[in-house]
Length: 204
Ligand SMILES: CC(C)(COP(=O)(O)OP(=O)(O)OC[C@H]1O[C@@H](n2cnc3c(N)ncnc32)[C@H](O)[C@@H]1OP(=O)(O)O)[C@@H](O)C(=O)NCCC(=O)NCCS
Image (cartoon, protein in one colour):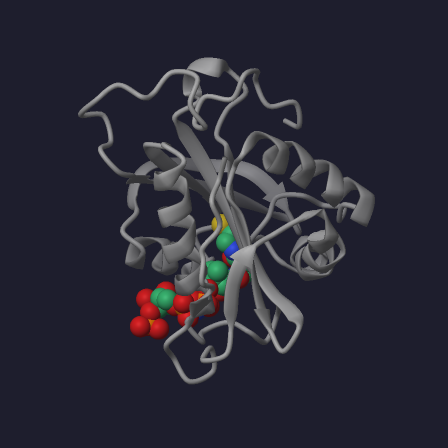
Protein backbone atom coordinates (compact mmCIF):
# COMPACT_ATOMS: atom_id res chain seq x y z
CA UNK A 1 0.00 0.00 0.00
CA UNK A 2 1.05 3.56 -0.60
CA UNK A 3 2.09 5.18 2.64
CA UNK A 4 1.19 8.84 2.63
CA UNK A 5 3.68 11.40 3.94
CA UNK A 6 3.60 11.72 7.70
CA UNK A 7 3.93 14.30 9.04
CA UNK A 8 2.59 16.33 6.10
CA UNK A 9 5.17 18.30 4.16
CA UNK A 10 5.31 22.00 4.80
CA UNK A 11 6.48 23.82 1.70
CA UNK A 12 9.39 26.18 1.90
CA UNK A 13 8.57 29.20 -0.14
CA UNK A 14 6.65 32.21 1.06
CA UNK A 15 3.37 31.65 -0.80
CA UNK A 16 3.48 27.94 -0.14
CA UNK A 17 4.56 28.14 3.48
CA UNK A 18 1.37 26.81 4.97
CA UNK A 19 0.57 24.40 2.20
CA UNK A 20 0.23 20.79 3.28
CA UNK A 21 0.81 17.90 0.92
CA UNK A 22 -1.31 14.94 1.97
CA UNK A 23 -2.65 11.69 0.63
CA UNK A 24 -5.91 12.21 -1.26
CA UNK A 25 -9.15 10.28 -1.00
CA UNK A 26 -12.37 10.02 -2.98
CA UNK A 27 -13.67 12.93 -0.91
CA UNK A 28 -11.27 15.13 -2.91
CA UNK A 29 -12.87 14.30 -6.26
CA UNK A 30 -15.01 17.45 -6.40
CA UNK A 31 -12.03 19.67 -5.60
CA UNK A 32 -9.88 17.94 -8.21
CA UNK A 33 -12.66 18.28 -10.79
CA UNK A 34 -13.00 22.00 -10.05
CA UNK A 35 -9.26 22.51 -10.53
CA UNK A 36 -9.09 20.42 -13.69
CA UNK A 37 -12.19 21.61 -15.56
CA UNK A 38 -10.89 25.11 -16.48
CA UNK A 39 -7.75 23.57 -18.01
CA UNK A 40 -9.93 21.33 -20.17
CA UNK A 41 -12.05 24.24 -21.34
CA UNK A 42 -9.36 26.91 -21.72
CA UNK A 43 -5.96 25.33 -22.28
CA UNK A 44 -3.95 22.75 -24.14
CA UNK A 45 -2.43 21.42 -20.91
CA UNK A 46 -4.83 18.51 -21.36
CA UNK A 47 -6.11 17.03 -24.60
CA UNK A 48 -9.56 16.37 -23.21
CA UNK A 49 -12.28 18.58 -24.66
CA UNK A 50 -15.11 18.01 -22.21
CA UNK A 51 -14.45 18.23 -18.47
CA UNK A 52 -15.23 15.10 -16.51
CA UNK A 53 -18.07 15.29 -14.05
CA UNK A 54 -17.32 14.91 -10.37
CA UNK A 55 -18.61 11.35 -10.61
CA UNK A 56 -16.26 10.67 -13.52
CA UNK A 57 -13.37 12.10 -11.52
CA UNK A 58 -14.29 9.76 -8.68
CA UNK A 59 -14.25 6.93 -11.21
CA UNK A 60 -10.72 7.87 -12.26
CA UNK A 61 -9.39 8.13 -8.73
CA UNK A 62 -11.05 5.05 -7.26
CA UNK A 63 -9.03 2.36 -9.09
CA UNK A 64 -5.77 4.16 -8.37
CA UNK A 65 -6.59 4.49 -4.69
CA UNK A 66 -7.79 0.88 -4.54
CA UNK A 67 -4.59 -0.39 -6.16
CA UNK A 68 -2.16 1.71 -4.12
CA UNK A 69 -1.08 4.26 -6.70
CA UNK A 70 0.02 7.56 -5.10
CA UNK A 71 -2.65 10.28 -5.22
CA UNK A 72 -1.78 13.54 -3.44
CA UNK A 73 -3.54 16.78 -2.64
CA UNK A 74 -2.03 20.16 -1.80
CA UNK A 75 -4.15 21.97 0.74
CA UNK A 76 -3.95 25.44 2.17
CA UNK A 77 -6.31 26.86 4.78
CA UNK A 78 -8.62 23.90 4.29
CA UNK A 79 -8.84 24.37 0.51
CA UNK A 80 -7.39 21.98 -2.05
CA UNK A 81 -5.22 24.09 -4.36
CA UNK A 82 -3.57 21.36 -6.38
CA UNK A 83 -3.21 17.67 -6.91
CA UNK A 84 -0.86 15.12 -8.40
CA UNK A 85 -1.01 11.43 -8.96
CA UNK A 86 1.07 8.65 -10.43
CA UNK A 87 -1.24 6.27 -12.23
CA UNK A 88 -0.61 3.30 -14.46
CA UNK A 89 1.34 4.20 -17.59
CA UNK A 90 -0.29 1.50 -19.71
CA UNK A 91 -2.95 -1.14 -19.29
CA UNK A 92 -0.66 -4.03 -20.31
CA UNK A 93 0.57 -5.77 -17.15
CA UNK A 94 4.26 -5.79 -18.09
CA UNK A 95 4.23 -2.00 -17.76
CA UNK A 96 3.38 -2.27 -14.07
CA UNK A 97 6.70 -0.86 -12.76
CA UNK A 98 6.05 2.36 -14.72
CA UNK A 99 3.68 5.15 -13.77
CA UNK A 100 2.44 8.25 -15.58
CA UNK A 101 2.19 11.44 -13.61
CA UNK A 102 -0.54 14.06 -13.62
CA UNK A 103 -0.30 17.41 -11.85
CA UNK A 104 -2.64 20.39 -11.81
CA UNK A 105 -2.69 23.49 -9.64
CA UNK A 106 -5.66 25.76 -9.22
CA UNK A 107 -5.39 28.78 -11.45
CA UNK A 108 -3.74 31.60 -9.52
CA UNK A 109 -1.73 29.17 -7.40
CA UNK A 110 1.13 28.56 -9.81
CA UNK A 111 4.76 29.68 -9.46
CA UNK A 112 4.71 29.43 -5.68
CA UNK A 113 6.59 26.16 -5.27
CA UNK A 114 3.49 24.05 -4.70
CA UNK A 115 4.06 22.05 -7.89
CA UNK A 116 7.62 21.24 -6.88
CA UNK A 117 6.45 20.24 -3.39
CA UNK A 118 3.77 17.96 -4.83
CA UNK A 119 6.28 16.32 -7.17
CA UNK A 120 8.82 15.78 -4.41
CA UNK A 121 6.22 13.86 -2.42
CA UNK A 122 4.98 12.06 -5.51
CA UNK A 123 8.50 10.81 -6.30
CA UNK A 124 8.95 9.65 -2.71
CA UNK A 125 5.60 7.88 -2.63
CA UNK A 126 6.10 6.25 -6.02
CA UNK A 127 9.57 5.04 -5.07
CA UNK A 128 8.30 3.73 -1.75
CA UNK A 129 5.63 1.78 -3.61
CA UNK A 130 8.28 0.20 -5.82
CA UNK A 131 7.71 2.00 -9.10
CA UNK A 132 10.83 2.42 -11.27
CA UNK A 133 9.99 4.88 -14.03
CA UNK A 134 7.72 7.89 -14.22
CA UNK A 135 6.46 9.19 -17.55
CA UNK A 136 5.08 12.68 -18.13
CA UNK A 137 3.01 13.26 -21.26
CA UNK A 138 3.04 16.96 -22.05
CA UNK A 139 0.99 18.46 -24.85
CA UNK A 140 1.85 21.57 -26.80
CA UNK A 141 5.30 23.05 -27.34
CA UNK A 142 3.83 26.33 -26.09
CA UNK A 143 3.20 24.83 -22.65
CA UNK A 144 6.54 26.13 -21.46
CA UNK A 145 5.46 26.03 -17.83
CA UNK A 146 4.95 22.27 -17.86
CA UNK A 147 7.97 21.52 -20.06
CA UNK A 148 10.27 23.64 -17.91
CA UNK A 149 8.70 22.37 -14.72
CA UNK A 150 9.26 18.72 -15.60
CA UNK A 151 12.82 19.37 -16.75
CA UNK A 152 13.46 21.13 -13.45
CA UNK A 153 12.11 18.07 -11.60
CA UNK A 154 14.72 15.87 -13.26
CA UNK A 155 12.73 14.47 -16.15
CA UNK A 156 14.43 14.01 -19.52
CA UNK A 157 12.70 14.33 -22.86
CA UNK A 158 12.53 10.90 -24.51
CA UNK A 159 9.99 11.44 -27.29
CA UNK A 160 8.58 14.25 -29.39
CA UNK A 161 5.45 13.41 -31.38
CA UNK A 162 4.86 16.09 -33.98
CA UNK A 163 1.38 17.41 -34.77
CA UNK A 164 -0.45 14.44 -33.31
CA UNK A 165 -3.29 16.32 -31.63
CA UNK A 166 -5.79 19.01 -32.64
CA UNK A 167 -7.36 21.38 -30.14
CA UNK A 168 -8.62 24.96 -30.41
CA UNK A 169 -8.00 24.95 -34.16
CA UNK A 170 -4.33 24.10 -34.21
CA UNK A 171 -2.02 21.12 -34.36
CA UNK A 172 -0.23 20.19 -31.18
CA UNK A 173 3.00 18.31 -30.55
CA UNK A 174 3.16 15.90 -27.63
CA UNK A 175 6.30 15.33 -25.58
CA UNK A 176 7.14 12.35 -23.43
CA UNK A 177 9.43 13.00 -20.50
CA UNK A 178 10.85 10.27 -18.27
CA UNK A 179 12.39 10.10 -14.82
CA UNK A 180 13.96 7.04 -13.22
CA UNK A 181 12.81 6.22 -9.71
CA UNK A 182 14.68 4.30 -7.04
CA UNK A 183 16.92 1.60 -8.44
CA UNK A 184 15.52 1.98 -11.95
CA UNK A 185 16.37 -0.99 -14.12
CA UNK A 186 19.36 -2.14 -12.05
CA UNK A 187 17.28 -4.81 -10.35
CA UNK A 188 14.07 -6.62 -11.22
CA UNK A 189 10.84 -5.29 -9.73
CA UNK A 190 9.29 -7.05 -6.79
CA UNK A 191 6.65 -9.39 -8.18
CA UNK A 192 3.24 -9.13 -6.55
CA UNK A 193 4.37 -6.04 -4.63
CA UNK A 194 2.52 -2.76 -4.59
CA UNK A 195 3.99 -1.81 -7.95
CA UNK A 196 2.48 -4.95 -9.40
CA UNK A 197 -1.25 -4.85 -8.58
CA UNK A 198 -3.10 -8.07 -9.10
CA UNK A 199 -4.78 -7.07 -12.32
CA UNK A 200 -4.43 -4.44 -15.00
CA UNK A 201 -5.97 -1.07 -14.19
CA UNK A 202 -9.53 -0.84 -15.37
CA UNK A 203 -9.89 2.88 -15.94
CA UNK A 204 -7.98 3.44 -19.14
C1 LIG B 1 3.10 22.91 -14.33
C2 LIG B 1 2.70 23.25 -12.89
C3 LIG B 1 2.20 22.00 -12.18
C4 LIG B 1 3.97 23.77 -12.18
O1 LIG B 1 3.67 24.00 -10.80
P1 LIG B 1 4.14 25.36 -10.09
O2 LIG B 1 3.78 25.32 -8.67
O3 LIG B 1 3.64 26.51 -10.89
O4 LIG B 1 5.72 25.27 -10.27
P2 LIG B 1 6.82 25.70 -9.20
O5 LIG B 1 6.50 27.05 -8.65
O6 LIG B 1 6.98 24.61 -8.20
O7 LIG B 1 8.11 25.83 -10.13
C5 LIG B 1 9.18 24.91 -10.07
C6 LIG B 1 10.06 25.15 -11.28
O8 LIG B 1 9.35 24.79 -12.47
C7 LIG B 1 9.70 25.72 -13.52
N1 LIG B 1 8.52 26.49 -13.91
C8 LIG B 1 7.31 26.47 -13.31
N2 LIG B 1 6.44 27.26 -13.95
C9 LIG B 1 7.13 27.81 -14.98
C10 LIG B 1 6.77 28.73 -16.00
N3 LIG B 1 5.52 29.24 -16.11
N4 LIG B 1 7.71 29.07 -16.93
C11 LIG B 1 8.96 28.56 -16.84
N5 LIG B 1 9.36 27.69 -15.87
C12 LIG B 1 8.44 27.31 -14.96
C13 LIG B 1 10.76 26.61 -12.95
O9 LIG B 1 12.03 26.02 -13.19
C14 LIG B 1 10.46 26.59 -11.48
O10 LIG B 1 11.55 26.88 -10.69
P3 LIG B 1 11.85 28.42 -10.27
O11 LIG B 1 10.61 28.93 -9.65
O12 LIG B 1 13.00 28.30 -9.34
O13 LIG B 1 12.15 29.15 -11.53
C15 LIG B 1 1.62 24.36 -12.83
O14 LIG B 1 2.10 25.49 -13.50
C16 LIG B 1 0.30 23.96 -13.43
O15 LIG B 1 -0.56 23.42 -12.75
N6 LIG B 1 0.11 24.28 -14.74
C17 LIG B 1 -1.14 24.02 -15.44
C18 LIG B 1 -1.46 22.56 -15.60
C19 LIG B 1 -0.38 21.80 -16.33
O16 LIG B 1 0.17 22.23 -17.32
N7 LIG B 1 -0.12 20.59 -15.79
C20 LIG B 1 0.83 19.69 -16.37
C21 LIG B 1 0.17 18.91 -17.46
S1 LIG B 1 1.37 17.87 -18.32
